[in-house]
Length: 210
Image 1 (cartoon, rainbow, N blue to C red):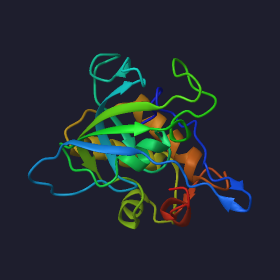
Image 2 (image 1 turned 135 degrees about the vertical axis):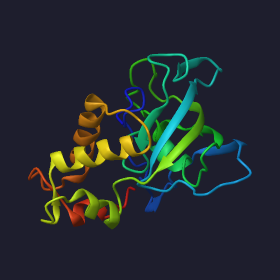
Image 3 (image 1 turned 180 degrees about the vertical axis):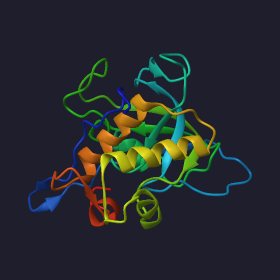
């Protein structure tokens, strides 16, 4: 689920000025299409399959998942900083088949540093279509299913087995490279004490920034 173009480079924009706090920047959201039937809505911890186009403020496209690379939609987990913070904020409560336009300020995108072809302090516009929503690894039910030896902690192998089963269950072929990247990203973010395992508390605890 590591999105090369969308890896997190942003930090919180809460700063003190004269004893007060400047409100955190917001994402402008425009719903372009919403299906008539919506069986579930996206929430933090869900895994989303998305197509997206990205534009600079002048309207120039800098990325399109439909036109670049393998032209495949991409999976990412909502709310754990796999994508820019603007996506975590702007893609909540979406239905499968819904399309949104997000205008993301620099503080919720790539900030002062920029990234690759993205200049520093860039406001970016994304048109994002959610194709599918799956349960992600942020629930006790998922944890129990993943914890194969019932020791209340998850190894890398257990997480990878779970991801492989989820893909196969929904008709997608296994992809070891993708699964390895997903496992690495999950452990980087969730293994707080860096002991090589994810405890039930580490796995399900919702951090303030999420």
